[in-house]
Length: 296
Image (cartoon, rainbow, N blue to C red; front, side):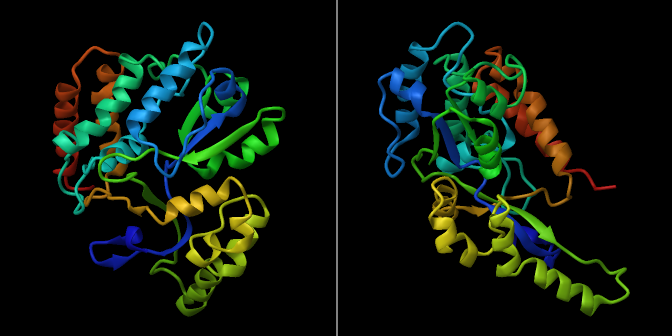
């Protein structure tokens, strides 16, 4: 609900919600072949994740990788938060990706590519993370619940599981992603429209989504429902939900521009062409320029 509040006004009710990029999906056979134990999600840290991925990479063939590159805004947010930082402040007016706390997390993501060599730079692999995971090109991917049903339909013969992402010094850094059910001021029957919105976010409809293989809505009483708790994959995300906090958005609404500016400036970092501190400062400046604009 908090994520859908903008400048003191509520812009909808949560229809679908999830704890963001909190899941590390692993190919259990590749993990076993590398002789490494599957993560102990209750305790494992970013440092342990790096060590494990290096061991997996040591047993990979030419052009094969331990992890699909974790370089999206969602990855940056989780990594920064895990060490007490963020990429944008709570008010959505200040870019803080270059702060020491954020740097501590983002530097690990960069090291996975440029130092540890367990992930390729963005663009090296063709296709999305799910396709590369199914083909065995990568042994793990770090993403959200949205791939679960695709894996169940397409990854026949692949033994996989998902675990919660690692802990930093300040926890796991998970954020809440939300899709809304809304009505607007142009509605000619606002009371009836609101009844529809209420129905869409009801427990009945939310569990209906889950029955069709999608997320169990945005309600905690559906995410904690026994039906969800019995699902080996979704129960991981239900557990992660208890650690997630709202995702911060630009106060001027320019989320696409902000993310684009950050991503552009971090390109040289993933290629090993610029130190992390310099790249993050460039990203901060570019992001702040967007936040200082007046939305058109």
